[in-house]
Length: 202
Image 1 (spheres, helix red, strand yellow):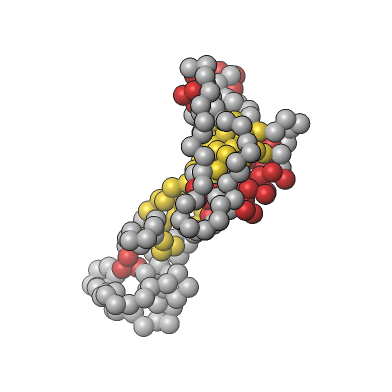
Image 2: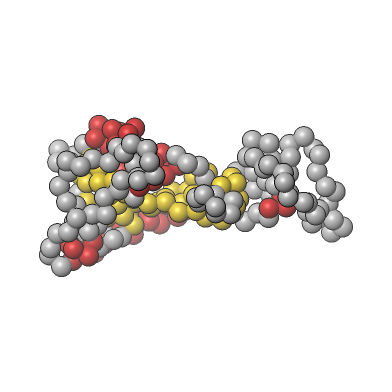
């Protein structure tokens, strides 16, 4: 991964003529997912050195986190310092993880770009912009579909500034939405395959 082998392989596959014929150049969707780090919660130790001793054999010592507030700022993982403690939503268990991001074209739902970032509340939106920007460098506006995690005014405005029409699902958690309501329907992969159009999830 450090040699960008995965990215080079994906680019080589997408450049194949038989594959290029399958790809849409103007309708895309983006999404992110949590990828659990290969690190034990026992490796999540305070920076001040106040930590339980290691077991015989080099294993992490037993730790009781009950009632203790754990934070990425004060307790990094000694096994994987770049992993971040993150929870998918309220009531969900926090885990040491990363966030994976994928950009799909909507004709056949093929992945055309992907990347890995540290987990965070803004990571999905931050990762999406550099993936879509090279594809928006054309006279005709492209379309990008996304779920409610992308419902943020700065993200929507950035897309419009690069000639990309956002189709973002409305976040109904109580705050005001930035999801645009003045955009045409974006064809999904299944609708395109059937020669019809249907509204996106947004």
